[in-house]
Amino acid sequence: MDPEPAIGHYPFHFSVQFALRDRHLPSRQQLRAWAAKALLGPVQAVLRIVDEEEGLSLNQGFRSRAYATNVLTFPYGLDDTGSLSGDIALCWPIVRREASAQGKTLKAHCAHLVVHGMLHLQGLDHIKSSEAAEMEALETQILSEMGFPNPYLINDQGT
Image (cartoon, rainbow, N blue to C red):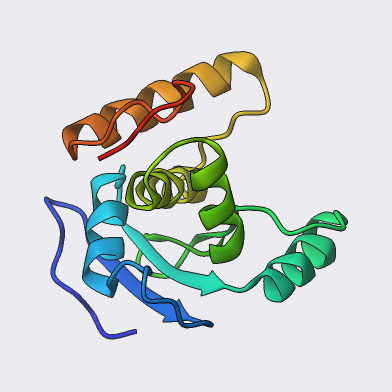
């Protein structure tokens, strides 16, 4: 990855890989902008947009779960520059199905999952209810600042 300019005051190195084609996919610039809004510190990350087969393989191989899920995060810890590093896999067919089923726009749902993955990469989690409340509040705040509605409201129409 080539060095990129810092976002705010945090170094941010971000690559996007598309393992499939779909005319509804957001641009690399859009994905990067959403990810940048979720920065809590210096980060070096790769976001890979995958198909369902690769999503299943990743979830099965790393979490022993025999299904594809919307987003997976693989944090690697601090690199030699002091940045958190890791990979995020976004399973596009699942994202599309969920957006439709939940009455959300594809753009709003995708932005949410990019933010969600970035927060996981930086150590936030939602296993305990107290952690979930903190993470959901931060996601909602970040998305609101970008003009998206609360992703946890039922039948949200997105923007």
